[in-house]
Amino acid sequence: MPPKFVQTKLLIASGNQGKVMEITSLLSGFNVSVLPATDFDIKEPEETGKTFKENAELKARHYGKAAGIPALADDSGLAVEALNGDPGIYSARWAGDEKNFNKAMQRIENELADNANKKAKFVCALSLYWPDTDKIATFEGEVQGTLTFPAKGEEGFGYDPIFVPDGYKKTFAEIPRDEKQKISHRAKAFTKLIENCFR
Image (cartoon, rainbow, N blue to C red; front, side, top):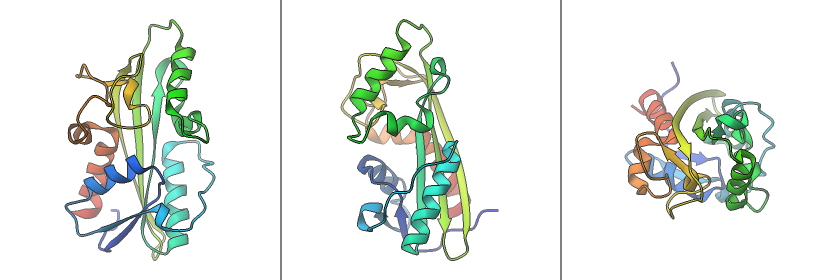
């Protein structure tokens, strides 16, 4: 059994404001002060893992040890079936140092070319690390869907404008944020985290 979270402060190991906002909102019912990584002068670790789980755990440990408080790290991305699961763990890296996801979405469209298989899934691994006990708990969630081009919608972030979740006709970027938070890969991983560590 993973440990229960009884602390009052939690570092979110991400500089991505969209992610931090989403996680803060998902934790709003609990008595926890959520602190973004940008509040700390901690250098980002190199993501050397081969899976979302390995990278999430690596980041949670890195930030938790450096800050001395529990850290929650998310590693997530888009896995496109016809591209052998790419960009996958390299989802952020496809956007380059300038985090240009328009460029990354264009690259996916270019690489798919006229391939009729537009199946894709969003995957999220969430790792919660306690530096005082060196314990870590990781939970994964995913949502299946298909890709659509050109990009549509102003909500969301990252690859949301080209991803239509199964059962919907709109992209993640066209679905209102509160609705997306109920069905997203991050929400599914979060549900498991809450049930196991916060309840």
